[in-house]
Image (cartoon, rainbow, N blue to C red):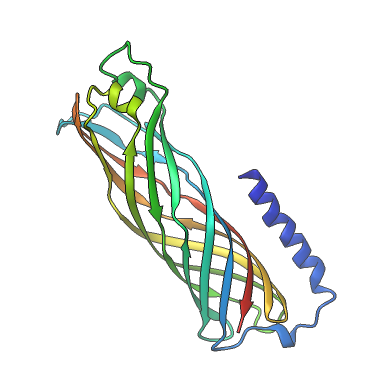
Length: 241
């Protein structure tokens, strides 16, 4: 993630340097423009999980037990400029895949101390389409920063448990599922315009919350709420028309 953030900072420096040598009026957005952006999108979760409950028990086993790694895929977005200052962006991407691992003593749940469990819980795939309304304050400039907010829908699918985690819980037939999520999203970014072409960087925060359920373990059914709440960093090339 440090490398992605450095790229974003670097492109921002280039943007500032470019302003002094570029005309502005011919490069501004106008009502009716469509902006297409494509590039890398890195989902960097800030995971936190609630209390883990086993088999319907009222007392939890523990909390903040799950970690989620980051993943980079191809991001694609289309923005429609309703006015020179306001646009609607729909963000999509190729599917993200995240590894889930244990932290804060989750390994102690293992039913058989002789089982060598490496802390790998499993993995999941998701698609996070996001719609935002964005404000572009510079109506007449080749440098187009923007800020906005909207709604995110995250579809989780293809959830899998690792064989070592299943063994640690005393069952090879455990089933794993994650509920889909609706949440708010906020974004900040900037375009540098070169005629109809552009370079873009952005950072988006998404409120993603899911309920994880593991059925058929030696401890009964396990249920835990997981806050994924990632930052999504993008570096793009684009075209407006």
